[in-house]
Length: 171
Image (cartoon, rainbow, N blue to C red; front, side, top):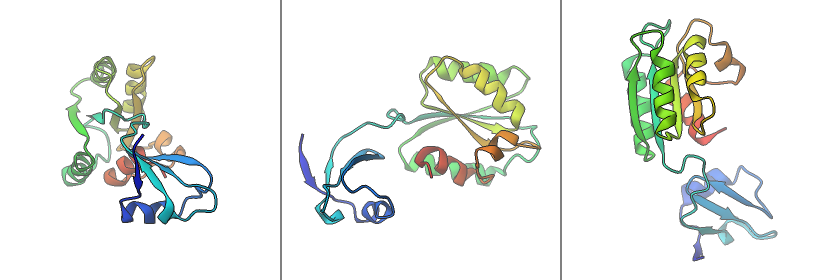
């Protein structure tokens, strides 16, 4: 394994808020190793380390266009642009009937898509979850329904950009 000095100052600043002393931790495409008693300047990065569950960085976004409170196209485009800047290949699908969300999700799972995002309400999310049963694909949501009970329970932001950032990066 080739070790080299920690190269990204911005990433170092983000990591200073995390307690990593004495342990290894995955962060994006890098693994940061901090040795007890060393500073972040002494940290090393082993590359490449595809330890994320999103190693292929593929996503399908399933939008229910008739859901209440669907975000504006501009807001959805911001989320799409951010995902693509992060190296994600994103496919957008729009439902036209009641069975489409589940079918689209099942097709995504068959293609081993990393992340399947529902843009709709609880009914849309439920249909997508049913389509993903038994797969390794991860379910995410951009809240766009009337109640969004599930999204509120897990603390997802209603703004598409912030929601996808939380899905990809975590807290």
